[in-house]
Image 1 (tube, one colour):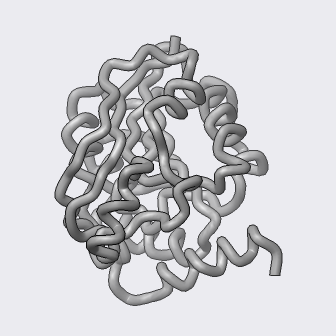
Image 2 (image 1 turned 180 degrees about the vertical axis):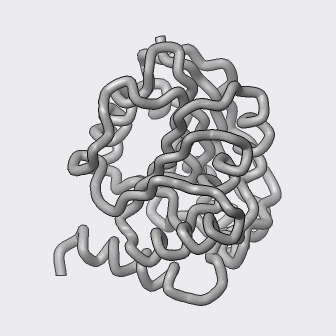
Length: 209
């Protein structure tokens, strides 16, 4: 099994269970900040079971999403149907998907921990899909999160430090953005089965120059 296939199989296994792995309510940072923005076209990369995408759709956004997991897509459509909204959810790698330059007014990267050898390339591709002045919303585990994971595995997150983020890496990958806010913060997570406890995250909001 190739590395990509094993990565896909891992996420399919996690999302195949009846319960929603990270719950059905949106990420708190996303919820708080999305309400400050005018509705438009938004993209959710690595969207899993769809909780954030579905929330955005209920708020009036035109939502696109993608992930490598077919099982995640199934759950996302079930959640969308339950909430009487429509989302456009693709399965595959970003380089193979039919998104176009400047298509989106916002991109929301919520715990989108891509493989380290692909992350910079994916971030660069996402920038081309965002229009000038478009908004990036981001929350992901910081490199310091490993210390919290050692104390409590239930808080979740990658075990490999190379999958985790630093402020400097985000500034490098999104160097053509103006950061409205960018911080590392210790927070209490209560998201479904796999994000429970205290952890260290990086949050940012930025707009494309």
